[in-house]
Amino acid sequence: MGARKRNRAQELKKLNKNLAFAKLNNCPTSPRKMRLVADLVRGMNVESALTELKFNPKEASRRLEKLLLSAISNWETKNEGKSIDQSDLFISEIKVDGGRMLKRVQPAPQGRAHRIRKRSNHVTLVIDSRNKK
Image 1: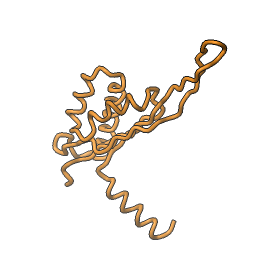
Image 2: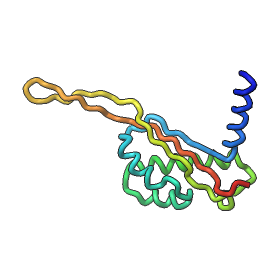
Image 3: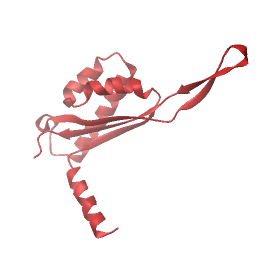
Image 4: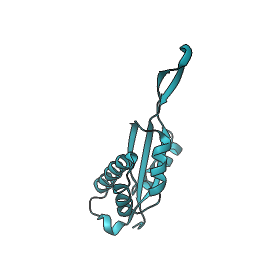
């Protein structure tokens, strides 16, 4: 690795010191349904996002709730001496990308067939501290 590339990598590592993230790959729901729930909690504090997800009736909210708890656990592992209340954690970034599609065939009238696309998605959730100390 060249010197410039190594220096840039070290700078990025310092910037991402306070960040903690969690990923959910190949979640078997459509990305559109997951984005509806993700848009609800984007930019919220962690505590209010957890209560929002807990009382949301959609299936995607259960999966995002577990993902958020995982990201909080990752943050606690990275920052052992700090408490969650003092650091004022919030969801800084949440991305929902399309995953692979399982293609199935639905029989149709007169010998035809329609294609069914069973979609999946990938979710990346990043939490950060508002208090940069």
